Image (cartoon, rainbow, N blue to C red; front, top):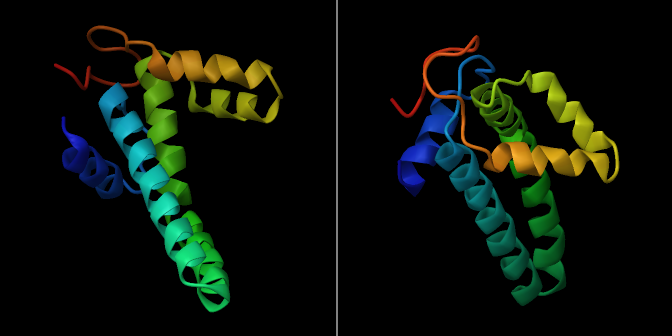
Length: 121
C-alpha cells in the first residue's frame, strides 16, 4: 500500500470503525494530516497577518473534517493488534498513553482475529 492508496482507503471508509487497518494505512494517513497542517501553517506565516487568521480557520475546518476518519483508522489499527478501539481513551492519560504508540507500531495479528480478516493477506 502506497501513500495515495492509504489516504484514499481511509477516506473511503470515512466513519467505518469495524474491521482492521494495516500499519501503512494508519501511518500514511498520519503523515498526510501532518503535511496538510504544515503546508497551511507555512501559507499562514508567509501570507502575513490576514492569512494567519485564514490559515487558523482553515486548519479548524480540516480538523473537523478529518476527525471521524482519523478516529476510525485509529480504531481499525487497534483492531489489527487484537485490541478494542476504546483503548484510544488511554491517550487522555499523560505518559501512560505512550503505550498506544507501541501498539500502533506493532505488527497486526496474523490471520483472522475477532475484528475481521487480515488486511495484509
